[in-house]
Length: 117
Image (cartoon, rainbow, N blue to C red):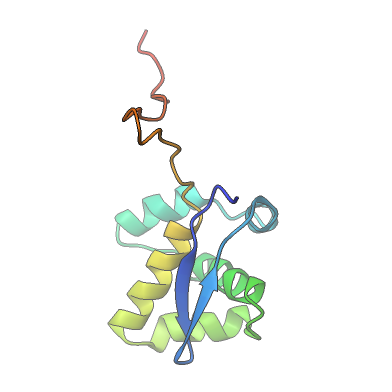
């Protein structure tokens, strides 16, 4: 079972189901791409489209889609608002780990907030 959730990315009119892996995450982060930086910059209205293109291309390639980073970048620059939003959201949601919960008891994951000094 993967800690990551399956996402559906639409490319060239076809839906592709992708479940990321730690190996895929490592390969992306080894290229000096930070998901935290992307999230921050996107929330500030300046998404790093070249980094997003790399992530989306790698996700699609992991689903055996023959696509290049350049093709994804072109789609991000010229696609419809819906296409762009869907690809960007899919890329960011894909690598958010599923939180483990005990549904029977209603337990929540441990709080990872650093203690204040």
